[in-house]
Image (tube, rainbow, N blue to C red; front, side, top):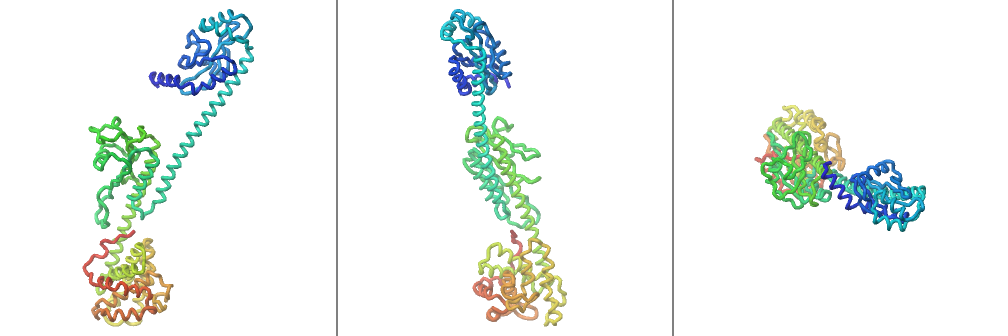
Length: 547
């Protein structure tokens, strides 16, 4: 600490000492009927003058009193019979350590003797006469005992005050910690893959505004890197979110980030015009800010910043710590979303490859799986299925015949009627498809469709002869879509059925081969289903998004 800083603190203490020592001085006056002087032993200055002003060297007096403070008990520090000077140690505050001192008559005598003795001890001669006139005799032992009681009481009072201050600080810290924990808990509760990073980020800014005294908050989310073969519709521009009164726009914030040096770490960086080495300060309306990167491992996903402390202070470690915690949550979430996106794209590629392999295996049914998938989605939507279910049903339609990869080519491509043995062989495609896909966790809900789309409502189907509600619901939907496309499509050995004949077969099979509800949905969506048969030139899987 510099001399100037020490002097400033001493003067500050001198101005405010009454709140610290006023109570002790009043207690001493009540007990002894005497005015004590308050001496700052560190500064060597009297903060308050009692009944007698000390005219000697205060610094020399302070040196003696410091020893009394060290011992911690009232003592006599000087004596000129019949006057003794009592020193009572007081508790310390800040950089100052104070004592209360006053002269007392310890033996009965005349006033002139008291005046001479007080003057000899360094007290003001003119004040000594008035002081001597109202003195009573105090035995040494009684003075020390009473002073001990007053000092002990003062110590208890100050310890209680200190304890109350600590409790208030602790209460405030607990309140702040509660706010921070509530914020972080709220964010983690919203951490789910289906929640967009923009939605979570905007909510984070709103909650941060309740916990950090800043005028505005900024969140910039960087786009994922473009990779060869990406098919997902991903935004390729940074997303700029703000909350509160934010004095920077997207371009200004970008210039700020470009001028900061975060190095190989992800720690918060404090920003102010005097503390940064910008060639030209880029944020004219910014007094201060704290910026934290959003990272996961070596990946950078954006930046989070609080701008302008609304109490004219600088941001401290508590604000930076909270921002860093929120940034870590957002960075982890962004990383998980990116990983999930890559996995979804990979799975989409696998599905495309599998679907293409079916067409390559049986060119006579090229496009059948895609049409079944589209028709099944129309049926499911008519039946009130959710968007998530529609995605599952679409995948199920694409993959329902994947097991035909394991069927002999001469059986699969045979133009004439199948023998019983050949029919039994081709029926195996349902179980083969199940075995092909069963180890793909992402396709768990597709497996029942692949395995059971040839079950019949009356129990006469295969492979297990399930009946009615025993058949998985999605399998019942795909079964109708499969039959519809198979009967209406052209084959080398026959022409596709006309609408009237197809409608008759479906009505007659409702309640025996197919779920009556699904057949009813077919007729409700009849015109849309017809349009699927005409859409021969579309790219079915190129825009597939799996979530």
